[in-house]
Image 1 (cartoon, rainbow, N blue to C red):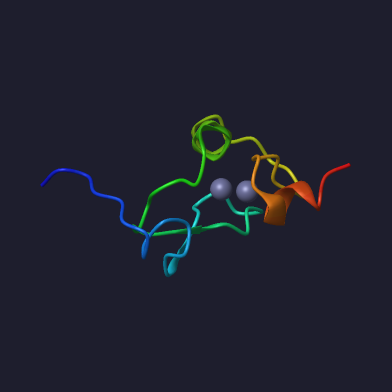
Image 2 (cartoon, rainbow, N blue to C red):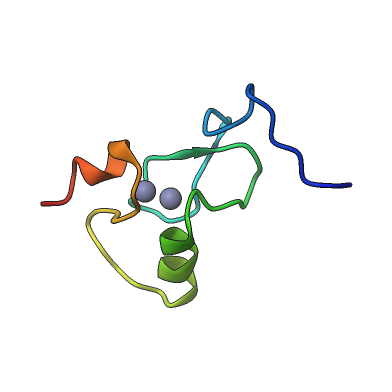
Length: 62
Ligand SMILES: [Zn+2]
Ligand SMILES: [Zn+2]
């Protein structure tokens, strides 16, 4: 199935981004909200906060 993003699913999904400190929502289980989160998980980067570019997480970082 081709990946489709419509206005109902973009960043308002029911799943949490798998990067533990990340607060972003994703529309598919196991999907990452950003390339940063994918890297953080793959490289097992442990952080108290997420540094992806989304507003929910940017508010946590200085
Ligand atoms: Zn995040
Ligand atoms: Zn994320």
